[in-house]
Length: 208
Image 1: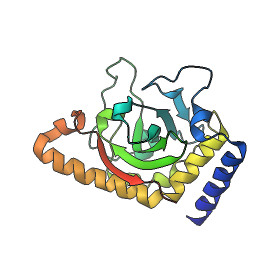
Image 2: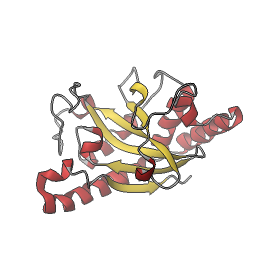
Image 3: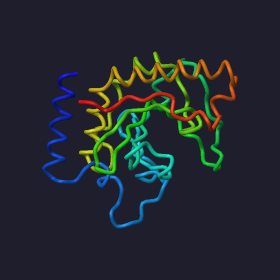
């Protein structure tokens, strides 16, 4: 999408001019950075169609080389009426909190230098999502829109433009995710969705 690419370059230029990359705009500078904690607390949810993201980081030994952390991004379950998920969470999470109606379509990792590294997909147990087929996500991904969401508008607008521009590559890695899941399911059955050894299912470099 040419317009999305232009918008992405425009926003990236503005970020560079201000000298503050996306991650410091999300992670407070006046408090310790806590591994696995969601930034912002309670996630960032768009007021319009309830698109959502959060940023977090794993332990250093569990990160991609050079990675600081990553943005997990979601579409709302309401967009998927009459679509049967591959797998779905219980009414409440293991920590007792009510399950959110979300569909995870991918994550975007960022390096310690503040630059994006790669898109990737994850297994169900990582985000406790309603795991939808790739083709169902493909017909809805263009609806991801963080316009007007809380927090720094540069972050929300940049993520929106990035997903719009990388629409086809993101769909490709979701399709690869489904292929890997199908192969693993032949070996593990439905236990594949909760198997902690099956985590990252596909990856695509962030390459403008």
